[in-house]
Length: 333
Image (cartoon, rainbow, N blue to C red):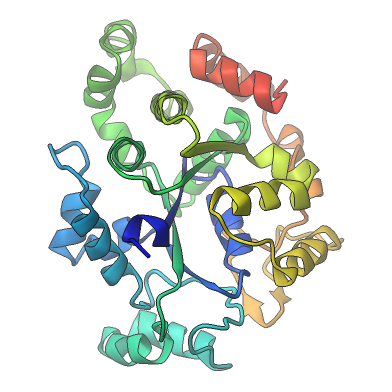
């Protein structure tokens, strides 16, 4: 099997639900899953960092895909993320979470972690990334790797990003180069907002970044024909089983019973998941936890956003063709 057939990719804006989606897909017993490997391994791996900087004039060949696969398939504390699920094709030890915690705090244990948890065979590998729409475009234009792009209502996404940035849980470095990003993406937008940036709020700047990302992503998906799939967080919330089955079909994977059971479990959660709780032996930060009832999360942002915040966001996104298309397909109000 070629590397293009082995690799599957999830992209999306930060706080759009990609971590939630990745964890659901990770329940498939016959796949390997990697959490933001270009961001996390790229910090120390020059090969992966070169691919991450997709604005460079690079071409992704079959040899490049094989290189990416061979690096990503090695388990690493930085690209594995709980919850951990049983797998049929490679080692799964009950102590993985403890080993993972030790490996994150003690890098010297990384080689041992790789030995214990790297797949023994050659399974399909799904990775998920955020804010790498240029790289996604390379995959869609130059390879046959199937790609899913996750989108969510901009108010929900941006409000969550803004909250994370204020709590130092999310990076805000892209705001410092916003003018440059606007100029590369759409010079007319740069002309309009360039002189206004200095007086714009952090929420407005975060919204502009979302607009850049969604326009790049939707344009790439539209040009990819059937290779790219645009999926909405709201669709998963409303009909989890059907939406996840569609994604597995796009990845040419079966819809396994463990995934169905996990979705049923999530939809049965009644407690308030806004505080850290021990669920299935996994302690997770409340901001990043995947243990949320999707049906209860869909419109929760509407109870938390201030009218002036919503007005700021909508003023920037309402003129975007990509927002219009997404709003129509996902039935965003």
